[in-house]
Image (cartoon, rainbow, N blue to C red; front, side, top):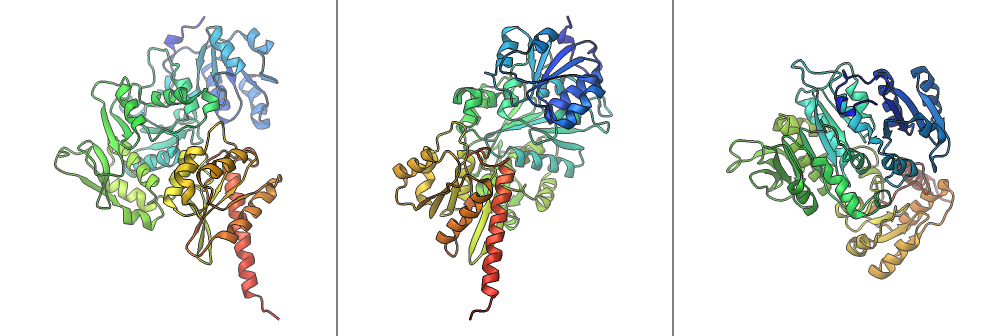
Length: 506
């Protein structure tokens, strides 16, 4: 039996360690590839193997079980794993996860493995890269990208990794090495990370939980479990615990966290900042946390007007920028570095992205607003919009969102297979708002009908806003597929209007 407490370095003896890897997506493959390189004995168990990854496993000397996982496969139990490393899609109630814990087998996520082997490539002074952790119900990807780009502008070799798309293990094994890894963490990854029991648990340089609102409740089993998973982001933080002053839950997470002595709490919000905060004064984003004279002075980062010129002035975007600035400042980025980064920065597709304009109506794709909190931010940025809402609700009730924001929209267009609860919420809380349902079952038809309905009610000066507050998988391949189809339908409709306007009449 391998002493797992000794496995805290790439250079430890991993040979012969028996590991079952659950899942064969990009994360699962990165785990199997890493363990193979370390000399471990590996079996991947998955319900369905990606064809390319499946072909590569034998080359790596890795075994594969492909089949049902609703019970414990004989191949898995007979393998007698010492560690099970699960891809983040496996919830705590999954049969294999329950079996693993009942058997007393160590259960890791890919992030824990990456931390244990983080010293494969080190800096000139012998230290591995600093880690910055980012989570929150919304804004994670944007803040992760921003932070990494600010650090690169400051001259550091930095990379955005984790839930953003690139597995942390791929960055850890990059032969060029990094000064900093900016790690986006989902609540699923944090649940696994919170299971750590080893002698060298993850200890980030800085961490932030941007905000907290109900999401993924089915996966976690409830709001408290979801909150507890998110709170783990601050554990053992060494330098800066960045939190949202406008979100009491994030402040309480910092207050309750066990951190390294000397770590500071750094707040951010859209108000006037205190002496250890970042905020906004007379339209100027300022830092009062990372300067010696913070009791009496502040450093200018940028202005709301500058951000507006680049489409970055929505309130939730300003908050993300302040959070990223705090993280980057904790690693030495200057206000000039932050300003220069923001001059170049562009939002990802499907995040408050203008996809068309015609006859005074602006069409905005925020398909990435997959939960009520994100949709509320979008509606705050575009008050009075024609709101396109609906999809796979993931156990979340939209009543509070409709009560808070529904009465202020010009009209609502409900999509998705779970429309009944949304329609009922509008009947209770905003009955005067015109409501239209799109009941097309075929994916190809949904957005064409959405655009036709929206065009019929939007007026000069209005915005048509796709902010679904729900996941996409009931009708679309992903939130990006949903957004792309919306944008295509908008452009096709605008082209038809332009053609009609140009065509001579009899």
